[in-house]
Amino acid sequence: MAQARAGTSLIEVLIACTMVTVAILGLLGSSARVSQQMGSGRRQLVAASIAQRRLDSLQSVPCARLTAASGGATTGEIREEWQVSGTGATRLVQLSLHLPQLRHPYVYATLVACQ
Image (tube, rainbow, N blue to C red; front, side, top):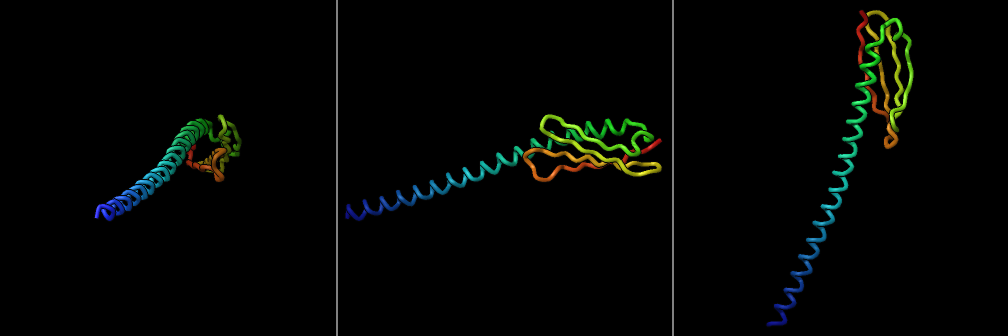
């Protein structure tokens, strides 16, 4: 009877070890995903900050000079490209930010009112 109890204890220990291993692997997998999401959030914050500065600077340009403006710049590793289109009372400004870690750029757009 003591041997039967020892065999049962061994099986219980093996099951417990398997469950702990599965739980640890699950935590490792989810922590990697959380880390990726935090990195993505940080990139979006940096891109939004750069976009806000660029769009603010373009909004301060008089419409006569802004009419056919397009250009580009580089801030750190982030490449900016902007295009201005439209006539009349407003101009559409489209800004694309190319980050080295991403395949597709972040695209921002705003309307500039001409006075």
